[in-house]
Image (cartoon, rainbow over all chains, first blue to last red; front, side, top):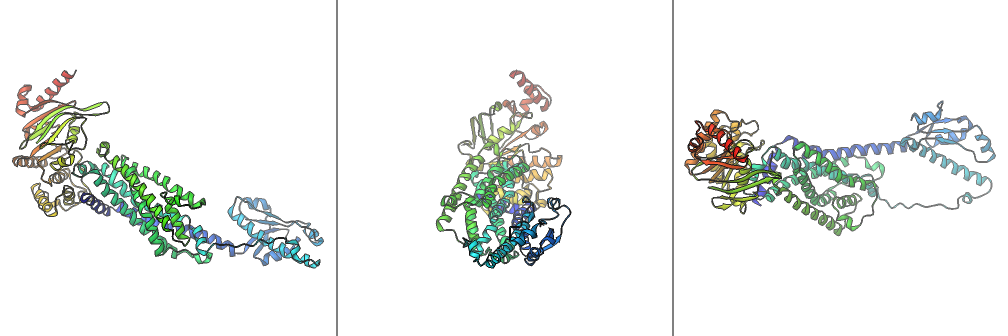
Length: 391
Length: 244
């Protein structure tokens, strides 16, 4: 115990003097998540808001064929523009997002009370084009509904004749749960921050120490290797934990710079979120430290360790990216799965709920058990003769 | 005292150490000599319990190194081939780290550390980070670190490697001083002058076997050579003929 503490204190002191570790563990990784998050979010929000309120410029072919229609659409926010020479090429080349084509015979059908047609040229593989198309279509549908009702009334019929069924929507989302959907990527950033925070120490204390050839004299001391390992793991976990805490604080600061009110959603990254996220992440910090140390211990050099660990990082965070995009129905056993449990728990916090006590317990127990297993495997790996020998 | 008997160690099909026996006594300096790749470093690594022998026994002050590695490490001071100082720590902090791992309390640690810094004449650099130390300064710091717990036995792998004449001489005097205090000093080298100048007893290793074990004077006489270097070459040649 005493020896593990000595190793721990030495590793912390030594790494606090290393600018590279400080930059990576305590500055770059806690900043990376919140900053990326802020940028992504603002891009998204701008896209949504801009498109919702901005006038919609639409080149109209044959505007003279239906002045009423054009006037009505203009009243709803469309800005008619002169038609390009070749509308299809203009859309294909992304010069125009959507083009409205009104044929010559529009007026003839319209005046007879028959179904007239218009054509909307767009490209469904282009997001901007699709969005403009959908807005224009919504405007058209509104116009169609009103005109249909007028025609029925003119013939002495109730508009309900043509409306046999009216589906009623009851949306149960709250401003906070809508926010959670938008922020489903946040747990991924939190895991990433933790991983990066411990990464340099995991390497420095294992393959780094071997590369500098100080592992051999260290192991000549009358200290069991498990104590040496425990001290090193402790230091790695401490840096990961600090990185994580700074990262979560960074997220709540970033939250203040996000104009979430405009989207009618709520993002609560306050004290409650901070405390529970740290609690759920605590065993994961240990598990990651053990995994990183185990992987780095097998690398021959610092560079090799960085390569291995980057691969490990990809393997670990990939499921959380998947989870962010594939909806799963949370079940209790999922909380016991490391990474998945944290992901689900953090998502639940973002939705404005505290995970139930059994869910928290499952998450903590499951991940702690995994950490213990990896710890034992790492001790075994550390006892191998090959590990200590430098050259 | 270090007592080695019938030590064997293979890596795959390579027999790195193949039947090595010798005794390094207290109050004596014992030299382990041999060409590159003879098995010196592997032998020493087994002595300081970094590796387990496949066969044979190692006793340090009567304690079995395989059965009680932690107890044995308390009685050993080790300077491995790789000095491995921590660059971001000062010389004093390097020494203190190992002192604490040896379980010294802070007051004894301070006294021992000051005494070694004085004895090895590294006062001026003691509080500087070891990054940028010269070879000599590095070896002295590593030796201070190895001796912080005042071990009875000292194992040094190629201690004068890369040292200039002045550093070599002061290191030599320091080792004599340890001998006069009754320590058991075992070191490996492939430099003959050094062995002559230092050793009370020379153990020659070739191809993982002990081919000679005697005081330098005896070795010279036995090989009928003028210098120890010639004696060494002759002994190695004879052992190669015997093996063939």
